[in-house]
Length: 383
Image 1 (cartoon, rainbow, N blue to C red):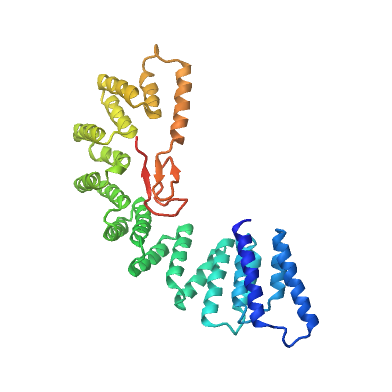
Image 2: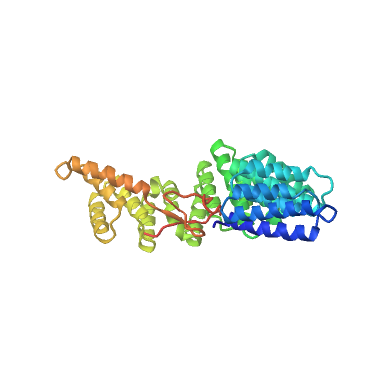
């Protein structure tokens, strides 16, 4: 028996208990009371027979809407929603809100449940309006701001998301600083791409103010500094990242390559060599191999490649080997080319990042986990 059916049984028991206390048939004759008992018994029989549709219909018909049965109708609406019958849930909760005799608490409950119905139905504008109403009524504003934040993230409405995250941050909500900083990063990322450097810088400063350890904000700030020619500032941030968050090393390779180019080519090589010794990974190994090959240090590349393939073989290393040895036609043929394509396909599917909260796996970094919806929870896999 699934959870929602178990909930229906509990609701049926609650209905019977409340109606027993309410005793709506005191003023009616015994025939009406017998009819009620028969219907209630039929509803229970339908539940035991796993015929939930008929059970819900009977209990819905049995209970008149009045201030003593509001909770039952809300529970029935929730059961419809959990079963996927959102339209019926919406009708029940809308009907409750239309009644003039609700208490303040009952009205707030009905608004909250109707907003959940709208979210489930994908009617985001209606849900947003109700959550805004909850905030104005001071009806569980923390819950309303959380739901609005999720809604704006879904819609990629980042300015509105920042507004909600900021409120939650000021309320002292757990991990609101992470949500707040990540939403600011979204704005900064778009601003850098569009050339709005002032907005990007302001957003990144705010992000790092509320979450000093935000790796994403630091990486975007490096990109902004490089774009504006401030290489020294970018270098300083990269060095701090390496010290503070070495587990994200695979994400530092490309910024390092952009920082240590031209006259600092040797510095970039030393950076890769030092980091590979301290934090060996396939990404660092390939970056170092590519650097050797690009600079004509073929002997070093061959020796390092041989060492990697023997000590820590990986799809990336084999793929590089095939490309690297392609210059020697005596060692490669069409079979090697096919194998290269195959290995590259496997490489694209390789799990490289795992969510530390829920275990969600991905081959690329996703700052907002698609599974548990936590920000900055995905970590690179160890080699």
